[in-house]
Length: 380
Image 1 (cartoon, rainbow, N blue to C red):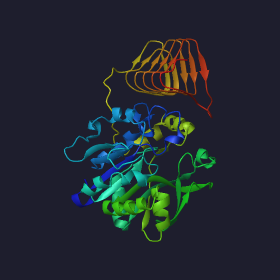
Image 2: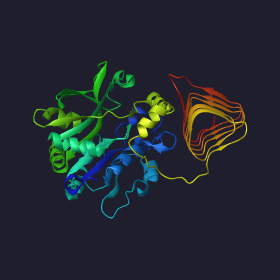
Image 3: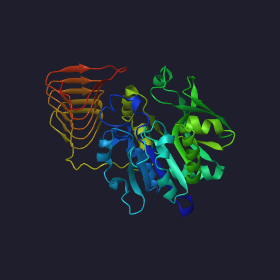
Image 4: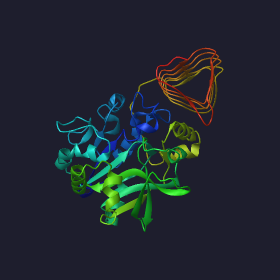
């Protein structure tokens, strides 16, 4: 439990990396993309904060956020229904003076009055393109003990190929660090280096009063991006510390990584590693247990409740309410909520969005290097 003098509020950015997965965010934003059979990406961040007694959380939506509002509701599943604090959703026009924003600076400038009114000492800021079961209390403790002005979480990994090969900044900025005894001395923007890098997780801890000062100054100078425009030029002045995260992490960078990170969870080792940090909460859908009809064949699959399986399912992720008819074969697929594979159909290396139907007898296949995406409500 955090005590009063180490209390923190959370700020979540659900739109920051929408451009990485344009197909999946056509009808939603990054935070509400389905993941791991029954969850949305934002569930992991909200659950981590809730377990760490961060019960004052603001979600800074920018556009396309109807599905996220429907998923979050009042925040009851994450114990965020509170008289003081709780869950706040800030659209881009939350105040008369507010404007649509590009980077974090503009977004935070829109809620400076809100930040001034709050009482928590620290602010935890995060995006939602990373799936991790992180202990924010440990990160805050590290921040305090290191005497940092700003603490940024990172992990050690190679840069994803899809980011390295991108020739423009249209997909947004990513950051790697040059460290000196744990202190960030250099921030590299959209680096192309090979080998293991200190790769930012875009999770920050900063004192609320310092954040207000930094954003105030940056906004009047016309700056947009917190890492690139605010922190990078002041690395010699500010004590910016790097918090190394060594737990399980799934980073969504494109459709291929989305497919692969889901499939990795079919390995019990990865599944246990992701959920070892504690329970992950999500919106409840009261449904029947999954029914496996006589003759059904299931091998190495993650299946949510409400499904009806009569055919064959192998190496696949099935969300709630999926139906696989008799004679149908599903292999190496992600089938989102209420999708249907009719009798005799054959599906392989597909990502099927919600309420997709593959009609009887159809044979549709992608490839391991290029899973085929079928959009929401489509009938093939």
